[in-house]
Length: 447
Image (tube, rainbow, N blue to C red; front, side, top):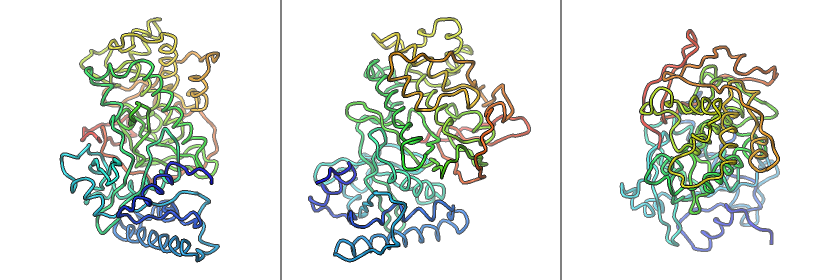
């Protein structure tokens, strides 16, 4: 018997336990939850027909898929023309009552946090399986689009460094996503709390840096279709029992069709301090957008501090600027988190240099994630010397102002406008092309 993927192993486990879920796990039917959302998300019908009709259509597609699966399970045929894009993903649909019981009716005591999507709750299933339930805010139009987007992308991907989606609930007005529960919360929970950061010794930090790189490499080059996450940051890196990293929160992620290498968009989304300049200022989105964010996270992991902290004084406030000054002065190991009792100086120096390379001003000067993975896994790989990174001021201004200066590429990829939804995470912003800068306004942190 062929080995089941983790998602289908969990399906089989739940089926065997006779839980009060509606499970669709027929391997003979190619109809999946992914195919149910494919048509709607790809053509952005949520904006053109309105959120209510949009979700009604989504549910209709889901119902059709479920009916076809049940028909196939009883020995019938789902039809030759019912196949989707060949994805072997399977849909799992939870009943609302089962999730209410698991979370003690969404008790505040079980609340893990709150993001742009809505609140997240811990749940406990009858067999002792812990889950995380992400509940869509009832009045959130933005969250509805993110809900569909996250279901679509996560059911299309399987990797040990990506958070696993078990399924969803879509009963009446309730929309929820059900994930594996990760007991150690997120990277920022440990990293930016000096009482907890000693739990992350150097070996663990290097493992996290490497694991995030593997997850991004999968999204960019190994997934069925290229995926740009767009919002890589410390709070979106969850940690499992062994402190292995898992990339989470795909509500803003973008699926790249065909051989496109970039798109241009007017809808800029993300978190201040992690966004690449060409994306934040000009809407130029590519895999190198994630590379830039990854570089910032690497420097945060090494230093144990946030990418901007005005309490540290003007010289040290901006992490990229301070890292660059130390690198130029031959003192880059001064950046290492002082709470670390011991660390590998060669690995630390490599990670600092790698972080600076990922945060270069121009897209072509940044390595892709395949190169990053090689740098981290090879003892003989010689890293190029980085130039000055793209350094942001307090109001999000970069010294380089033209799109061509940032991108410096003649790629003839197709471009589109629109299609992104602003997230309630970190800081929001509005574009100001007259000054080629970003004006920021503080909003609620998204976790």
